[in-house]
Image 1 (spheres, one colour):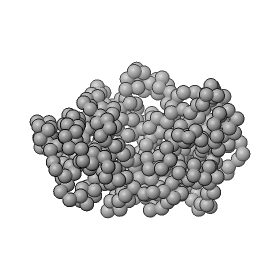
Image 2 (cartoon, one colour; image 1 turned 45 degrees about the horizontal axis):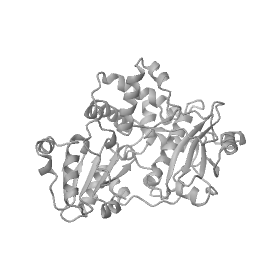
Image 3 (cartoon, helix red, strand yellow; image 1 turned 60 degrees about the vertical axis):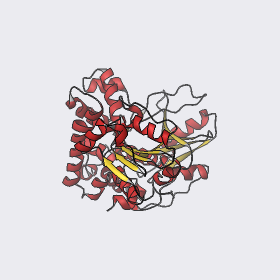
Image 4 (spheres, one colour; image 1 turned 90 degrees about the horizontal axis):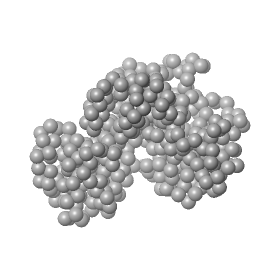
Length: 399
């Protein structure tokens, strides 16, 4: 995707959380580009040079890769001047661990000059080097997707959810070593990433909020309730949630409604972008999950929603992801809406036994919508259909 974008776009931005492989992907592209140069703003000397003379810093004849561009947002204005002067495609490849449009000090968003590619943690298809294109398949086949028999059990899905998709976590053995990775990741988020983009007075509150968010993953993001849990003013909580979304730790899934669905609740659903991180934050482990009463349902729902959300970033079809819940507590876990108006509902169930009543949300939605659509019962991983792979990403992240 990034290689395709550089062929006709002046500036390509690869955004995503730390440790998802942005730098590795960028290095691969630079290595294949004659005359390319790479600069890393995590290096203090490089950052100082960028701050001292932004215009000179970005001047280069070939492809210039700048890693962690959010460290010096003033560079974006200098890049704008440079690509306006020389309009050739493939001038700049930027990586960032924060959504650039949300940065408070952003001087210019390069409108019309840049394409942004969002990189999530690895999907199940990328980890297994297998097909992974449910989103395109359900719309191409008008919802009539035949899922092949799957040998994975509920315990297998829990193990995958707890593994997550950060390449370093995937490489480590489950247990203490993987847990240490997630613990260090949380510490870096609070002490480094958040502090880079915003001043927070009490970092301990952010750490507590992460645990509260994880405990509510896959549920409605009711701000006042979360604020009460950690004794935070609602205004502060909203700001902290915005920061966590800005650095790709959480994602709020908006509520779906149509003109005829007047009773829909507008509160978004909250997911942790990496289910492995979410599992660690709530203290879930494969051993604990063996208990029949272990609360693995929200973890598996978060896992499935995250897999579908990943596929939206490379899907050929213009599709948006929503959830649905009305005031009667009837809900659909995922609602995929095509730009043409077609709607597909997806139910996620943790039980290995699926009953007809599990799909009452989809049936209710069919009775209320004013546009064509189908419900798709989902009991297998969303990473089992064919997809167009991200060029070089699998190989790069497995080295």
